[in-house]
Length: 82
Image (cartoon, helix red, strand yellow):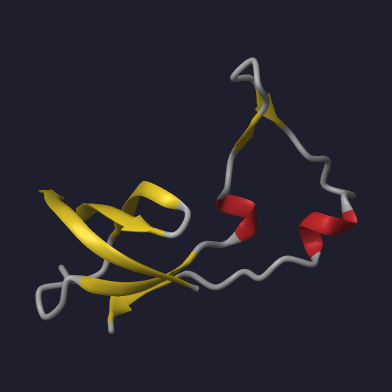
């Protein structure tokens, strides 16, 4: 879980895009849940299979389905106010 501070909020129809800041840096988080209004500090869990990795040449690194490291990673997605 990454404790994150919401910097900006953009509502786009059914989804909301949050720009957040945390120890990993700044990132955009998309949510289809209700808009977070009660706090500007949230906890974010990112499912490993939804992450994209890039090399130094900015090419995406793809992992095979059989990669045991991928199957051992957590799967929850939790976005909510603290």
